[in-house]
Image (cartoon, rainbow over all chains, first blue to last red; front, side, top):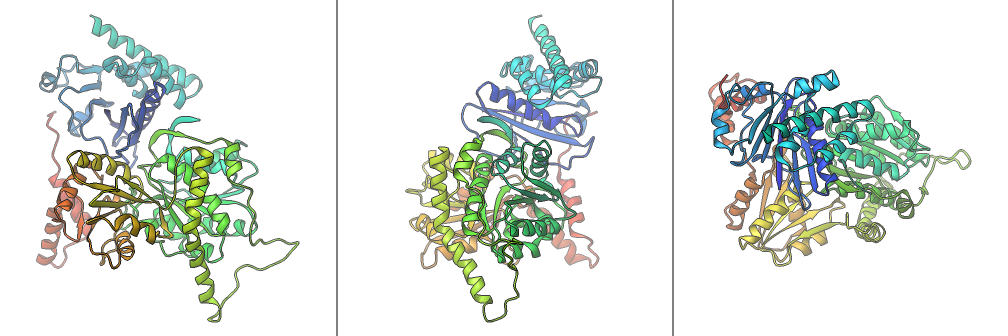
Length: 189
Length: 420
């Protein structure tokens, strides 16, 4: 089973991100479960959502305490919440930031993980460019597909189209694709 | 069709397939997405003929439901927590009058302290109100139980609550199969009321009944619930034949055939328990689960038959009778009267406290060695409890309990390792 935990702030689409990811996994024939942390949903407050992906039906309903993948939608949370709590040793971390892992002061954590498992992605900038709004959730899912290879970009785009309609879906899909291509290009460098 | 969707949206679709004619509701978390979904279906013309009434309170919601059901309309509403409590007087009237309303309860704790998260305090507080109460383990089962609930309610002319864990199920995306309209139509015939307010054949509903017949009216309500003990498995079997999957029924056993230890539970925690029980089975423990799917009527005989061969029974419940202990446990004890076995009540998940496999494993390790106290609370933070008790012993004006505990708990929480 693959367990993903998404940290962000109310209004950033943290819950929607987990839902889209579950739809993407379902599209690829997997079983998936997405749910929010059920906090009081205030704009700006720290929010957590969860997604489990497996090849068999998922029965457990507890929050994810040992994630395989962490997606951090707001890098400022690094100083506010222990986002790395329970992360498995070979896990992946994707952080929304225009700064490098070193600039974020995460060298120590990155050194504990396999190379390339802790990365940053300027998701807010990419979202701003495509959507005109700082909504990084779909962008980060494109990044997730590139980083982990666990879900295809096509499935992510399908998930986006399931949750959004018309131009908003198209723009989010384009933003996710740019993020995917950006990270793929970095990997092949 | 199998799709990946939110539990609340799935329930809204399922209720719509049952062709309700009146839906009245007042929004309250975590029920809101269900009635929003239904409201959109009515407004979009996809659910017709149906009147969707926005009412000014939960008391009004149940009152409108009573009125519309009495005129012969298939009627649906949904609520949770304080909303359920606010409609209590009308809830008793709905069952007392024998009106087959179906209501979803998106289970949530009751304040004070204010808490929006899941436990079973709300519907358990209404266990004696005369409604049938069915519990869903998953969103698929929630979908399926609503279809069965209308059938059950209308055959008995009694109201039915479908209880599903708030947030844990209502807000979870998972894959599920929605039946077709043709399937539901075959299973659920149009509503044929036993009593109806009809100007062509005038009757009154809601007589004042004195000592000469009140007990008999109440007894008949009990007799109907007793009949439901037979009807619920019949409807579940018919459902399985039509829809090709099992749902509902009185109880469901999981690996209980040779079990020495059986955990009794209701609702979505059964899934987490199954994972834990599988791990314990792998380690050689003879352990299983009895999921209670019909809480009212309470299936005394089925529970007794399932548990009588066990050495010990652990009732894991998300409800708590202050000053007494377990709510479900009392009913389970009644089912086991005269049978000698070790019984334990474990109260868990109150106010949304996560029920983790790690905690369940720890608790069940104690249980199989008969080291559990008769009543315990899973993951109770004893330190903050003791600190408050000590504070109250020390000073007269010890202050509000909830605020004190929040302060103590935040003092215990670890700060992030990464520095700014």
